[in-house]
Image 1 (cartoon, helix red, strand yellow):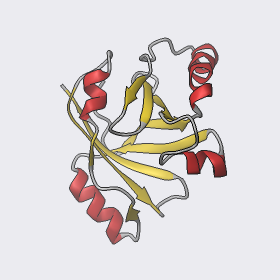
Image 2 (cartoon, rainbow, N blue to C red):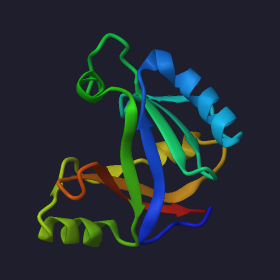
Image 3 (cartoon, rainbow, N blue to C red):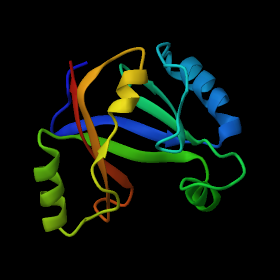
Length: 149
């Protein structure tokens, strides 16, 4: 995978824990994508994470099945859905500054997601940093500086 700079890197879908396996199976059948990683429990992020880098699709689910944790509010109010667009950037700090200058608001600090890459069976990265931006386009937008080895 080449780093996708100044373009859409991938999309993220949010599912309830009991729906994640079915969603993976459904996407495999409907889209013909057969290289999804097995879901990984990423306790630092509070999610189960599954990805097909060639398909450009990630699926996430809260680890806590009882309605706690940061993603349940979204699931309760908006349901299972497209959660975020991840836009590839060359320099995450500069991209974040540009977004702020345009009136958007970062809703997280820069997150080092390299743990995802270490657990991914398909790809390893030298850098995997993201920041979520609010108020830019009406959907969760994540700026990602993702650099494959």
